[in-house]
Length: 230
Image (cartoon, rainbow, N blue to C red; front, side, top):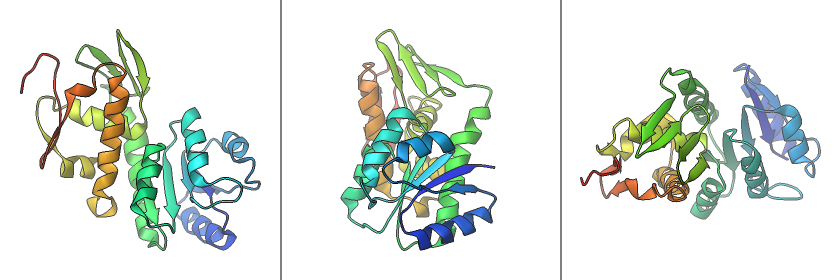
């Protein structure tokens, strides 16, 4: 049974979501003290975090940043705020997805199931270590290592990189990446993919590899192999 930590201060909404998710065999935990979110996160050890933006003490962005500094656990924002900047900021702080309130419960379930499929299922593949541009890409540990150093990726970033290097020197369309990541492209903003790719490229810059993830305007993305001139 997967454990979900729902960081939501609206108790009525919390109970409604908990009851619905429990019906899908998810084990749902809440926050008792909003000044001790990190302590309760550590105690629960959730498989996924669902978090609101507007919270007592500190907002959801604050807690997302702290959680991401310690863990690669998937993070899903659930918020009534509808400004595009909120979605962008949540992704920049390391969130995996964003749902705006009010929402249809089927959408929430679809998002959670897609997260668990891509985060926990693909690690069962036998080929979990790949090489690309002289670097070792450890899919299971979410690490990219070369002679310059080591960078740790989020689950989303590693999934994107894995998809690209499996088709290196070929253009992978945005639609294909969205379908692979979120299973149903109706439930994801196109901007979410852009933010994740940009974040991936910025991290790879630390290994002098960012230049090998190319944006093909109007088409998609391509992972070039070092020494290729496509």
